[in-house]
Length: 108
Image (cartoon, rainbow, N blue to C red; front, side):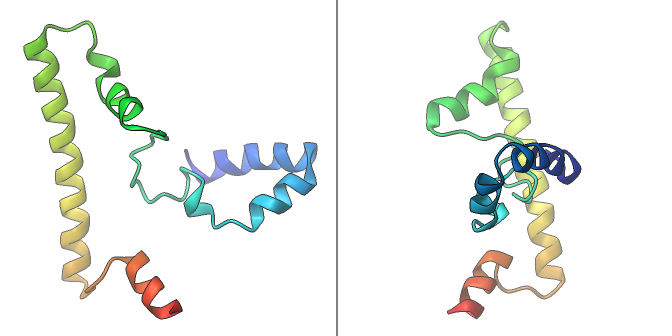
């Protein structure tokens, strides 16, 4: 979800129930929205392992098992490569900890 799309729906909520929007304002957005998850959820909101696996296999359900395994491997590899590049960039920028860890340390 993009930030503009988030605000579109958020404003609908605010128009329908300002009190609900006020309540949501008290929770950090990165804790409950995909727009601010920094791609940690890869665009997926899941509540358990089964849903996570189903989201990975969704497009491969009708393929032969070898094709399903290869597609799953390729997709997971893509995520690992992307995350690895993000971590390399953070290390090259001189970061010792992830942003969230640094913030937690500073807030303590």
